[in-house]
Length: 124
Image (cartoon, rainbow, N blue to C red; front, side, top):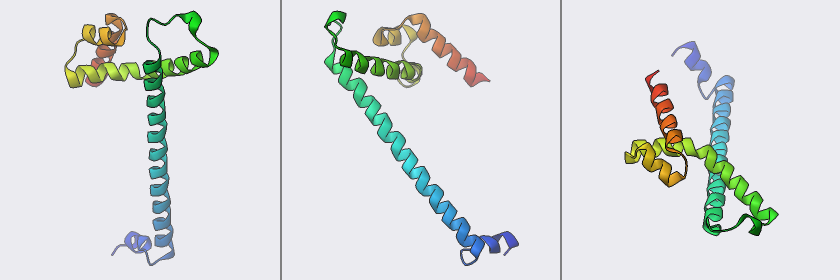
């Protein structure tokens, strides 16, 4: 057994300290991952709720301040997720930029640019 292995052994003070630190790090990582999952689920629920509640036929002058706030928060989430969604649709579903753009309501040139940038980044 090397000196490092002896010092890391659970029956030495250093070994017990390292084991305790490793346990704390594991607990922290699990709690952090759980928090991120919960936050992602809450953001997804907001987007789904807003999308289900507001149809494109609705007029701007019908919105309340509270509704506008919910829509703006959902919009920001969707905007942040859009590049990832474009890439996933292309890679997983073999969809082209025009088809993706028509589903997302963005321009074909925007979807094409995201796919080009992804391809360039993966080639580097």
